[in-house]
Image (cartoon, rainbow, N blue to C red; front, side):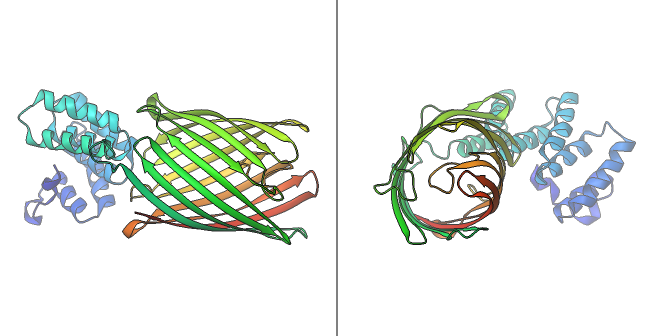
Length: 369
């Protein structure tokens, strides 16, 4: 299918051939305009519609591309180029199960087709990049993080350093973090353990526990557990709880619901917080855009309420109401390095200090080996 793009200019005598040449030259907008004109004149031109769907899928416009390609296959179920294009589309858009289903169906219909066999092998390889045979038994990662928080009132700024060690095993990820924070003359430390055990092919858990011996800035103890499950129609849901102890114990119930749209993942996470001050509700919204390199993403998150973010320290405790907005960037770099950057602002109404603004910035560098 892709080799058909490389057509000499002298052969590009009709709209479809000219569009192929334009697309090969990266002039996809003009190619799509030419194909749209052709389809307005001849809606039944399946080659024009297939090429339209293919180019749209390259542009990441998966919903539009899917509509074009499915229309071709409805008119001609055995259309080879449309079948291959739709399989690639589903794979690129993160719908690997659907891609494998289509590839298996294609191979069953034409067992002697080399392109169908090749695309099935590719789908299976990309869907199972961490199979028992391919995934290393153990993969380590170490990192350092530095974060700052500034306040609009007279409070001293918050400065925190963290070192982490992670190990990826066949059972899941295990991570240990050691942090030290300072605010004015106060200094505190906390040690945290995180685990992400795999429960099944579609489910995993997140378990966290932390302890601070002095508990001047961090919660003395914090625990949490949450179970995530892949749902039909590209949804993902979770349910969990958090518990943390400052001067008193606070229980927090949470969960999430999200859905994948192409390279995007949108999710909502409510929090219900019960303490001696009563029960409060909070909400966090996330819009995550996955970037070209596997594991890299840009995330936008916004929160409303008393506990719209995870609670680790006094910065997230004692809030009556808040409105927060943060941006997160995670980049996989060459040679095993990974960079995380985060920054944002929150307006808060606190029980002990009234209204204020809080500005945060953090950076993390990790190395895998």
